[in-house]
Each structure stands twice: as C-alpha cells, then as structure tokens.
Image (cartoon, each protein chain N blue to C red):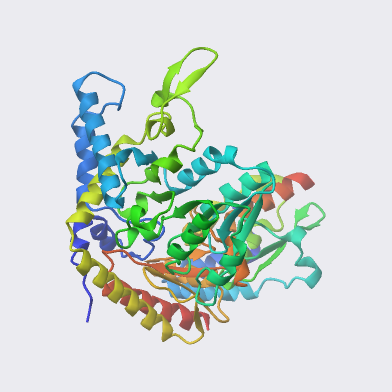
Length: 401
Length: 138
C-alpha cells in the first residue's frame, strides 16, 4: 500500500524534487509551499508593492488591507480574542527574543525562569541570557523516559519564585506532545507568565490559544507551509500590555522629538521597521489553504505515515529511537554507526533528512548522544518517500557494516 | 601541477570512480590509511570545532614542509581528511596558500563535500590548517 498524499500535487516543489531525484523528509526544518502561497506572493508583487500603514495612496491601502487581513486570519486560526493580540515577527526565534527583552523589566535578582530539558536553542538561549543579565535562576524541568516533561518534578520545581514558564508544545527532536495543560496550570497557580513555543506544534492540527490559556504563543511561518521571514507572537491582551518596546524605528512610534518619543501599543508598537509584508500575506494564504482541507483526512494521513515510519524504523537492527514520538517525526541512532556517516550516505542517495544536534545540544548531550538522524513528515509526504528512505538506509548500513 | 605521489594515487583512484557506492568504499579505505593518533593527541587543544563529528588535527612540520595528522570518529570523514592531507602535507605554507582545495576535491569528484551547507566539518578543518600554517610562517 503506497499511502499517497492527496495534497502533494498542490506543492510544485515535488516536481523539482522528482526531477532531481531528491526525497524530502526534512519538513520539521522547513516546509514546502503550496501553489496558493506562491500565487499570493506573486499577486502582491505583480499587483504593485507598497509599504503598509504609511501612505494615503491606493497601492498603500491595498497592501495594508492585505497585511492586516493576514493578521485577522492568524487571529482566527489561533482563536485569539482579536487581531491586536497578533504581532508579526521574523519567526519563533525573534518572538522569543522579543519576549526576553520586552519582559525583562519584570524580573528581579533571584527570580526564576522555568524551561524544560528538551527546548530548542531558540527557547533556551534568550532566557539563559536574560537570566545572566538580571542574575536570575534558570530552572530546567527534567524529562521522563518517553520524552515528556516530568509532571511530578515540575510540580516541585515550579514554585513561588517562578516568574515565567517557557515550554515547547511539540519537541523538535522527540516528537512528543508536551503536557501543556497541567504545566500551564502550575505556572498560573504561582502567578507566573507562560510562553508556549509552538514552532513544531502549530504545524500539526489546530490549536486554540484561548482554550490553552497560555499568555504567549510563538510560531514560524516557514514550518507552516508559508514563506520564511514571517512569524507570529500571540499575546493575550493582559500579558501583551506588560511588554516594553524593544526595537525602535518606523511606524512603531506615535510621536517623536529629538529627545524623547512615545510608542504605539501592540501590535504595531512591536513591529519596528518595514515588516515582511509579502511573507505575511503568504502566511494568510497558507492558512486559507490549510483551512480549506479536510482536517480529519489530513490528520489521518499524517498519523498513518508516522505509524509506517516508526514500524519501518523498528525493523532495523540496532536502531534506537529517541523517545517515543507521537507525531510528525522520528529521531534515531544506530548502534555502532556514526550518524555523520549515515547522513553522508543518505545524502549521496538523495535522501534529505536532518543529522546532528537539531539545535538542542543540551538535550542530545543529556541523552549521551553526539547527534542523531531525524526524519520528519509533512502533509505532502507519502509512502513512497518512506520506502525510498528505508531502501537508502539499508543500503547505507550494508556499506558501513 | 606538482602533486605528491600519494595525491596522484588519490586522483587515480577517485577520478574514475563510477558511482557513489564505490566512492564511499574508497573513502573508507583511504580513511584507514590515516596514521593513528596517540590518546594524548586526542585532546581539546587539537579538536576542530564546527564539525558534526569529533575531529582532531595535530599540527607538525618537517623542516619547512607541513606535516599534519588528523582523525575523526566518523569513517567517511576520516577518508576526506586523508584526501585533504595528501594534498596539503609536504607543501610549504606559501605553497599551501596558493592551493585551490575546492578544485582538488572537485577533481576527486567530491566537490559537494566542501560546499558551505555541509556540516561535516571539512571546511572547518581546512580553515584551521590554513590558520596554523600561516601562524607557523614556515
């Protein structure tokens, strides 16, 4: 059974991959874009580019309407209360950096920031550096054997000095949905702010930030089938009001003289300089595209493929999965084989997977591994992609063993 | 081009290599030719960072001639290191500065291994070799 993807034809990149004999299994790094997104980019530029929020002329109005329309689409996608809770950023990393600077004034020496052992560097380093600047304690929540944040230990570690909890929704290495509801409840009970890194999670299923009850949620467009250079910071209105401005210039200012200035509130106050207008419009188009698909069929396809990936991997002697992935991806090592050798030989055979430390050095170090190979799936992935990957892995191991 | 004997051998081996499998086997064979490092040489000071694998580079020279030794925990990278060293060792620093290493790997059919997107570390090793050679001002 070949498990074809009914969405694959919507993504022109696969024609190019077929022609160049490449099998793309690195969607967790970045996703391919549907024709609808490419069309939106072309429409924006070919229809006459203009800057947003600055001009009285018709092209400026057209661009501003499209850009603000994208903001509304994001707000609806996440079920935010209103579009003012949506700040456009360059991506998840910038969103998290914005928070680490914008919230800095709330922290005093000795306060605690809590993250987990599985965080991507983007959700570690901004907090680590904030802790160093302000003499704070960075508390790391440990994981259990499956790859989840250990709730019992979290209940001990999230305490009265905790001012902020920042955790991933879905691990980019372990593929596990993290127990956000109980973690967020623990943070709320201590009056701490909560930040969810949705970079991987947002790609799989629809998530309701209001129901989730987090203060902030960040994600990147490029992993969600949208252009790169655009990302989203959602902030619940009350939490957003706590942010101090962090980048200055452009239309984020309300009034300026030579010696002082006043700034706009969110969202525009946090979008200094000309934003990635076309990319934002492209993100809106990606959400439109995803919204038109059959949610259940899509989830069923991703689940079936993921199951096949795990079943296929488990057939290889000496292969060890990292954690017990729920969805979207699987990371593994093979006993006695260096992951760099494997990735070299997979690359020779046109298999595009990720090898290395996956921007999570402390996690890999904690697992005692120099690196791992990660295979990741998108809605356009199909059973033939997996068969080619398995065959290439066999071949590589034959050569190496 | 004035190539050392081992480099001429490498060219003869790789230039007519019919496909990726044969090339991979050859790389592994060439990796076996690296002179083993002492345990004490596998130290932090000799580590080359910026590689996905662990790589050690031990500088040395015989008179004015460069004589590096290297190893890695990854087998194919050991082969690439061997192919780099056969082109570099025996040169003076001034001669090394004039060598187009990218072209060398291209002649071997391994151009992609030096491309900027590669995280295998060959580029980092090459930069370290160039820096060490320049410092020693041989």
